[in-house]
Image 1 (tube, rainbow, N blue to C red):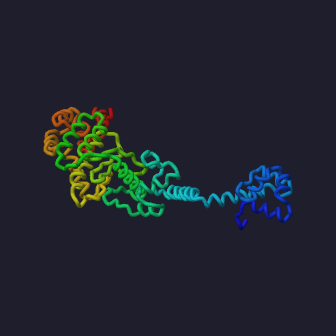
Image 2 (cartoon, rainbow, N blue to C red; image 1 turned 90 degrees about the vertical axis):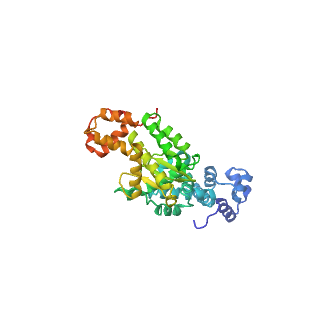
Image 3 (cartoon, one colour; image 1 turned 60 degrees about the vertical axis):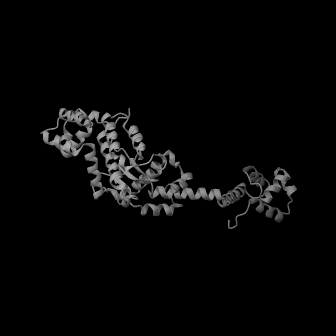
Length: 362
């Protein structure tokens, strides 16, 4: 079928060839004259009953008319802007999925993004601040991950890391906080350590505390194969921290958060780093990460107190750790975590502190 026309036009030509009038044909196929007129004018479509009636009247087979109608309907639909947009969205969604450009399952789990199907592909482009698939591909290929501490499998996971990072930035924009003042550092850290020490509703209390001091804080699950534990960045003029909560341990949470606060106070307050995105992962690279690690260690447990503790004890039993915990008001899980980090053999020793080191939300 080279030309695409309404089947009514084809029927009109056939009627002319056979010298059959509209009134004669309407009587033969038992339909209203006005309905047949609309079909011939192309304002009404064929259905199965019309096609069967024409076949019975000797005007070609029913399948012929139905094929003409289907071909014409598809042609008209493709001209429709709504269809064209839907068709484009489906194709883009398919390319995104097949090329693993972004982890779609992860995006579907973020209600505020409103990404559930191909109908929402424009929301993906909005998230990445691009207009189409090519823009999305370019954005991911050129995204700056300079401060990401890479693992050996980083190349396989880059797109997931970038998507997690972009989603974190979008989520941060939804959070409102007070004015951030670097001078409040000591007060914030002292109050934060008290939250850790009590280990009650830690995440919720931490959110309220950091937001009170002008820092956006939230947790964000990771997509699969995404070796990122946290990110620190500026969001609309305020520091923001996102943690993935890879482990549900208090010592891990406390160190990771304090590490990110190190980036806030050591780096984001420096104009040279205002546009930087700091990530935390297992591998260690770049001086800024060592600086943040030292900040975390020294603020969780004061260096002088830690040195006295280490020098005063030949071994670190639970009793020794509990005693030191009460003295410095640092949770025993955090102390044992530091002990195990500096003395790996303690990881294998049984301890009553493990149960107390769970991150609690009650």
